[in-house]
Image (cartoon, rainbow, N blue to C red; front, side, top):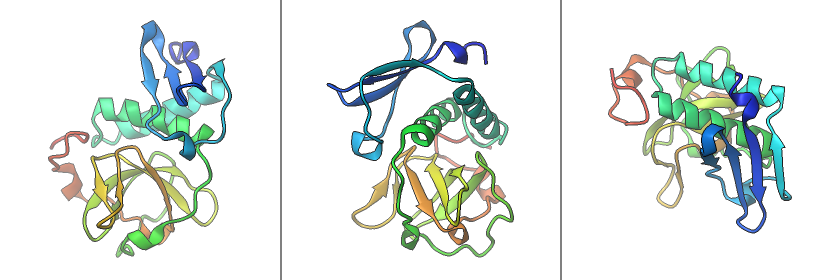
Length: 182
C-alpha cells in the first residue's frame, strides 16, 4: 500500500476528465462520462488512507478469485474507487436481467456474480450492497442488454439482488480475454 499513498486524484474541468495519477507518470483515466459523475472542480488531491484501503480490498478480492486477469483486476479496482467516490446515484435497472434461479446467499463488495440479460451473460463484481439494491461492475467485454442498450467493460449498474446469479464452474472456462482461462 506504500505506492498507493503516492497516487493522486486529478480532475481537469477543461477536458472534463477524472484521472488517477499513479507512480512514475502513469495515469489511469476514468472510463465514465462526466454525466455519470458528481460535479467536480479542478483538483489534484492525494489518495486518502480510506481510498488506499478500498482499492486494496477490492483488488485482493478480484485477484484472489482465480477468475479475473491481473490487468483487469487492477483496472476494475481503480474504476471501482472512481465510481464509489465520484459516481452519481443510479436508479435500478433490474428489468434488463433475468431472475436468478439460484441467487448468492450473502453478498460482499468484490464478490463475483453473474448477470443474464437473456441476450448474453456477464461476470460482474459487486461494488455496493447498500439498501435493497446491489451495484455491479461489468468485468468482461461488451454486455448487450437489449437491441439498443449495451454495457461496456467497467460500467456499473444497479439491480435487485434476485437478478444476481452465483458463478458456476462454466465461467472459469471462458474465452473472454479479461478473465483468466482455465
